[in-house]
Image (cartoon, rainbow, N blue to C red; front, side, top):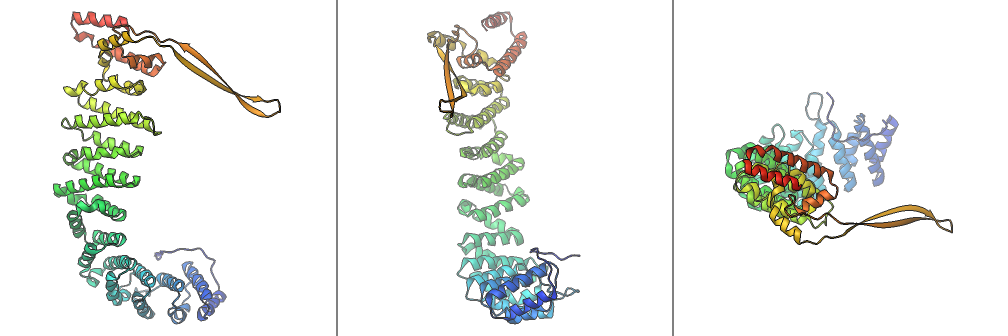
Length: 498
């Protein structure tokens, strides 16, 4: 079985001559030569060389060095060398490095302490780590946050060892105290991550206790909170209050975060909660709808998908009113993707119309909505007319009266063309020409079936809309069998006006 490797760098395998050169450089007093020799030794070890003769040299001449680069390279060297024999027992010479690591953990320089704590996160030998535990715990209360955050990670790594619970019995309690008093966001994130990994009950209790302040936490800590909720939803299934608290937290994150990636992740979590706790999510539908304020189309689409599955007869009017307001905002044309967003909104209103056909929901927000919009909603008509063909006959008296009062207007169409031209001096230029064609639209006859907007759309040559209108009229003809004789005559009269 091959050993695991946390670092890999390609380097041509050396020869005994190169090993001797490395040893001589390490024994000298030139710091740049020592740095270069340590780099060569590390790359040789990563590519399969053992170099056992260098260990004592490094202990004698490299460990006492105060240079930060040499100390960092020393920790990389100690990370990749074999620390155990064939039977898995720690080599006796490894005891020589324990005193040096302890001195580093108590070093006055914060960088030396921090990188040594990070090195301990990669050690798996309990015999080497056990004497260093008091120094590690002392760094949890250091004044510098760089040391505290690495000390927390070191405690987590030690606790996760096979016998780590015996080495650090009260580690979760200590980290929970650190979490309650810590001010640095990165250190706080590491502390919550330790509880999340090693003591999940404590992490959940802490989250539920401080759920109202989640929006004030840093993004790093909020991402760990999201991961906790995602992986341990089974805990929240038992407690509806916890589910509601989690959903409220998600909604707060959805509004407070500016990062689109965070918003998409939050929407995914809300979608998961909707699948198992729909009745709770229904009460938060308006909070979810506020995510439509984001200019990102993917966020808007995912928000509408979630909202459409949470609509009930109790909240449909409020939802549709919000969607109408969003549609009116899209008419400004300030954003590039307003058209795509408008189509999503119209399709959402269409879905509401299908879902709530009877009663006041049938015509209140579908017919009224289409009757007041501009002709730019031709595609929306194509979506709604097959489901609501009777819209063709709505408001015909009002439209006929209004159309008789309008004077006939003359419209013009401007056609422009461009072609290359050669000037007298031999240079190239672009020649443009424009021509205008005037036409008068047909007068709308009193009693016309189609509204002014729909008629103007048809007159512009929208063949797709024309096909949809024709299909809608065919549906109306199929419904004639439901009418009595008098209604049949009235419908035939309407057909002749078309």
